[in-house]
Image (cartoon, rainbow, N blue to C red; front, top):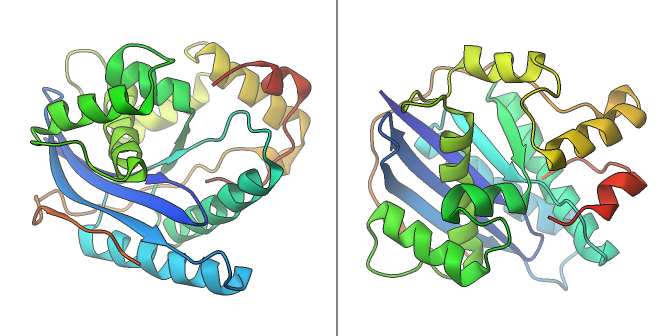
Length: 239
């Protein structure tokens, strides 16, 4: 069984998008990766439109079964947070329109899954991504490597031990289990989301049956999450 995951490293200026196919034995294969860009001097609505079209093209061309988006856990730069939240919202909307399940992963969760160390730097993450995918060099820029890491992380973290890959049932089981199987970071976020009311709940969408056949491999450089109030306890934890 092969699962196709599309990972998104959200950003308003650069948005990394990576697609991988992951087998039951945890081996992964690169399908496609790109970095979508928008100019800082463009009007905000035009930047979001440009990036949304790029995301739509990747979603419709590769037909992933799961979407993984980086969750910004703590960020002091408000402007950066807003841009990340805006494009994450666009990605969530596009996934909902296609009935695709979305999971948000914190940077520390991705680093731990890929390198075994939750505080790994970008070079270490990129090196492991290249090794896992059998690439001769680290995908560049870093947004590309981060998007691929998100996709791999999702398949590995949501799959059961022994190489079982994520299914609709396994995703729903994790969500219905409450906080029992969550990491400290995930529990803090779950508490913060509950305190913000119904609007803060994570999206859960039934998936469609996307294609699992491997597409052409290419590396291209083209020219999320909803805005939520972060509680003091969530901000006090490092990603």
